[in-house]
Length: 565
Image (cartoon, rainbow, N blue to C red):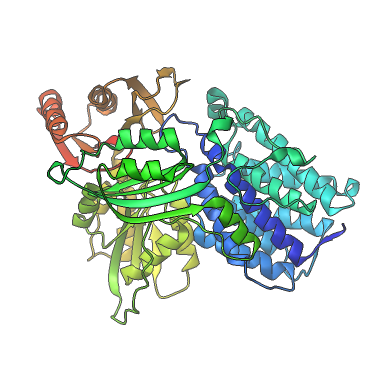
């Protein structure tokens, strides 16, 4: 086959998206840090599914228009750094096809070089040993070997082979990968997309199924993901189960809700888990063979607000018939009526997860909150919606997570040139976001205010306490599954059995002679009594020299978020 026409390109995009969907739990398991935030696969899956959904019912007569539509879908659905970079790869690919009706081998190579260039430009400080390395090395290798490749099939096979080889080299470029024994998760996700596209070029497009057999092709596949191989018992989750429950009380005959135990039950009986608690509301997404068991267990703690159960095999049938691919979205999508009021001068948006954190950011002047955090990153579209809803001339965004900064930035880029000026203050932690929000002054000039809020990010050290999801050795610390990790930024301070002990280890490592204040945000798994005891202990140890501020953040995943100023 000498060229890719528009119908084949559509099949290649769909097959790539489906192949990632079928394998994204494996990608999630390639988490470097032994904490419950392995969501690269999920973010990339949601991103590329958004692109696939965008093109399902389109009828185009050239590859450029189709590629641009696919790119737009990825752009709006991009989540997490890996998702944003993936969207930029396909944006560059589409730009490289401008004016093309079909794609020759040479034009395919040129489009992939464009994909590499645009992706690198999107990242301020590119890091090698990541998804960027995989797209760069594989696209450059393809360009250098074009004379040997006479067909589209041969070109795609070579491109896949080089991407796999690049992925296997990532631990040599990024020492932390080598230390933990994994390849880069974003690069692994990209390889799965390329693999699906290559299979489609051979006429063996991948279907979106819960169980996938990769042995039906001679096209090589990546099978040596360290720590990522699933056992047979972990495969075959046929029902995408989503529900929201409102927690009840013991007087209503309901059991007390413990997020850690609830998550443990979900993990034991399902995969692809997203669990978010917001005050008395719990939102759950899980793939399971026994949805009834999930519902029976959940109903012990409250009553259902909504329930959705989808047979993923049936969903595959829908896709094959041209219907939209289904994707979960735990946020409401109500269309707001057009607001004709004059724009306010300023608005402040923060990413937050937890009723206590929500209240703190509201008190600090945030007019819009975007739900999300470490285990559920908001999309570019989520930020665009929040910016529009803020209804202000100047909008500042606090992402409060390093994995969310790019999606927020991409939303600002999309809206550039309009009547709203939106800018990201690149807060990488909740505590940085709070320190920045304190400087919010609606009476200041936009540039002055932006600079002051950005400068405030440097005034606070951030740390956290969460539980370990696996046994490993890292930073000279032995990590034991289910023990509590004290982490200063990304460095593990200690791993101990008791969460309070972990907190005290963390604070001790963070406090310096020049420190003035300790802030502790208490998570949803910490009881009121535990929180009071911690406040008393910190006051006893540091109260004579430092101000102590302990607040209920009610954040999931992290027992404590700590800031020292």
